[in-house]
Image (tube, rainbow, N blue to C red; front, side, top):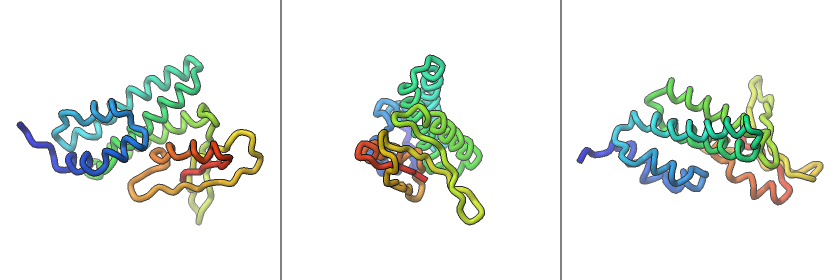
Length: 174
C-alpha cells in the first residue's frame, strides 16, 4: 500500500474537526480525502467537490430557488476555500481557487436569509472587503466584526453568523 503524502496526513489529522464544524458536508469531506495519496491532488480533488455545489447553486439561481442557491453556493465557497487550504506550493492554482471561493460567496450573499452584501471599507489607502448581514427588523443593530485568523477567510467563518443574526446583531466578517 502506498503511503499518503505527509501534508495530507497533517491536514486530515489536525483539521478534520475544523472542516466539518465550518460546514463542509461529511460526504464531501470523505469523497475528497478517501484514497488521496499525493499532495498535488488535494486542490483539484477538493475543487471537484466544490464544482458540484457551485453547479447546483447556479441551477437553483436559474430556477429562482434562492435559499437553495445560497446554501449550495456558500458550501461551494467553503469547499473551494479548503481546496486551496495550505496549497502554498501552487500559488497560481491557489489564487484562482480563492477567486472561485469569493465569487461563489458573493453570488450567494443576496439570496441568504437575511440577505448579505459585499462592502468595501477604506483603510489607509486600500480597501478591506467584508460580507455584511443585518438581522431582520432591527434598525441600527450592533455589528459584530468577525476577523478570521491566519489561514482562515471570511468565507470560512460564515457559519458563525446565524447565532448573532438571530439575536439582533449584524455580522461583518472581514
